Amino acid sequence: MVKKRQQAIVGFLEANRISFEEVDITMLEEERLWMYRHIPEEKYPQKGNPLPPQIFNGEQYCGDYEDFFQSKENNTVFSFLRLSPHPPVKDCES
Image 1 (cartoon, rainbow, N blue to C red):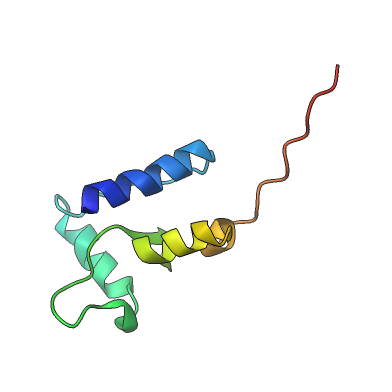
Image 2 (image 1 turned 120 degrees about the vertical axis):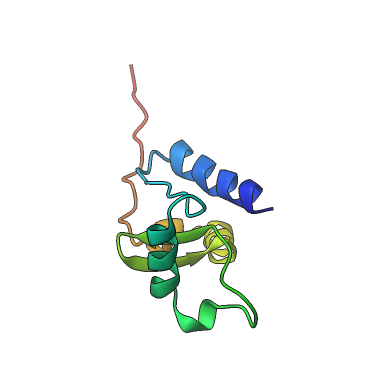
């Protein structure tokens, strides 16, 4: 389930040409600890640690997959990611 959720987020970011850095916390203990320190307490499950994917813009926490999915459904992904929206693409007329 984690991999599928990661792929959904990465696919959306790539399709919308949003630059991002994917961090594999399974291989980097320092990155995993950083992530856990920067996730708000209310996002922690009753037991254990929050599961990836967790989304950040720099050091600012944006949310988890559920938050991302909700913002996608509400067409508010750019504000969720703390980005300014892309200007509309203009049709080229010949």
